[in-house]
Length: 289
Length: 264
Ligand SMILES: Nc1ncnc2c1ncn2[C@@H]1O[C@H](COP(=O)(O)OP(=O)(O)OP(=O)(O)O)[C@@H](O)[C@H]1O
Ligand SMILES: [Mg+2]
Image (cartoon, rainbow over the protein chains, first blue to last red):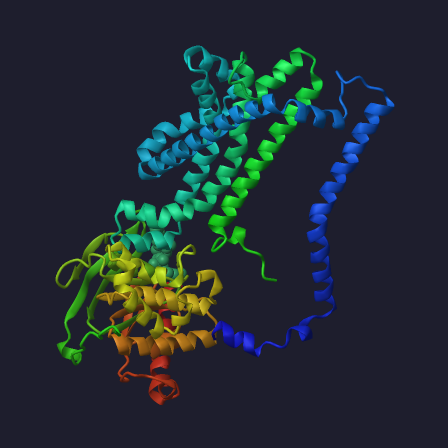
């Protein structure tokens, strides 16, 4: 029976709308609004409380600035902070790009050669579980170029989720489809391109979303370790510097920018993932019932 | 341009497709999944492997398709190994969820390096034959179970391979859809003239579809009876209600009971 047949024989929409359905539809509508209104409400109340606590207790601004002052500082220091943001963002995105290339490349290598996987996978895990803060000082001893050092740190943190997710995805191709490829005498390359890579896409995109956040963390941590700045310093360095000068409002402003950057990266990667999967993957589909 | 049917010679004169000669398959040196299986497949045959779970039906198909080598015995293809000129339908539709229906059917051509445009006509004709021409651009998730299975069959048949293997393709479908697909499969066979080895648990399905039914028993997996169903094609509802059909079903059923008894 074709889909149009089924539609034609179904009763009119009003008729199937019983009380239960109506209730569910109402709930869905309320939830759609609440999803946005509630967090905004929490934010407003939080900001108001913050402001009141500062005012009522007459807390000095070098201990805890109010939200108004933070916003003011953000605007006043925008030239400095924006330059710093660009630096951090540049490291983050470059690290993410290298993590994608390195992670996917290694994953493909691992699935093509069991020997390569057996030889190198344990070391990928070791790199991942060693906290980057503890490796970073060494990196900056041996790597002269500051940008390269930062990049290396951020990459170390970011590449593993992409590697492990993509490896899992490449291996989770449907067994019957894999057999079919063999029956049709597909080459290794064809199997990779037509079966394994598409199967791995949802896994890769999941890893990418994690890696986006991690590369920002890696970039910030590396900057803390790298210290000295001057020109070409990122947000983390500005936070440190403001801390030494007891410029607490600027610390908050920089922190706000970092948090916003993280949110934007996550949202952007989620949107990308949705675009890539919306036509076929379960995760991107609305449930029909 | 409809796919030109392979010309079918009368029974007796048809070309040999392949021969299994005393094939054994043992797993882990212990499990005898198949013992001394011999089978001759001629062009245009519709052969069913009927038997209880675990009697080596899937193993036989995997050996024929070359997915694994036999432990002993030989599988001889007429005119050399199949080299990919083979269709396979699994119990699940096994479609690529990221590709449209037409792209799924394109797969065997694509693996031979043929561009979509070149075979688009053939793909569309094949989809029309399975009644899905309007769904060429749909994704598998938009289709019902029966429709997905039709796509899977279209993919197996579109290149008109020398042999099509089907491993319980309709086992997961409801009875009505199953009967419909059985009828359609015979219609397709009449149109395209394909050669099929069909694995099933169902006595009725095997008798309705095949000209030969091999009844198999388990532990060790082997063929215990070979039935010939003489009724001419095309077969339809008239055949389903005929005494000849009932008699053949009884015979296959008895053999199956014997197969289960031996295993126990
Ligand atoms: N890869 C394998 N390794 C070990 N044993 C196997 C393997 N494949 C199949 N067997 C064994 O071989 C025997 C036959 O299996 P097979 O899958 O061919 O049965 P079947 O007739 O297709 O059963 P079903 O109707 O349940 O699909 C079973 O006992 C099974 O356990
Ligand atoms: Mg089986």
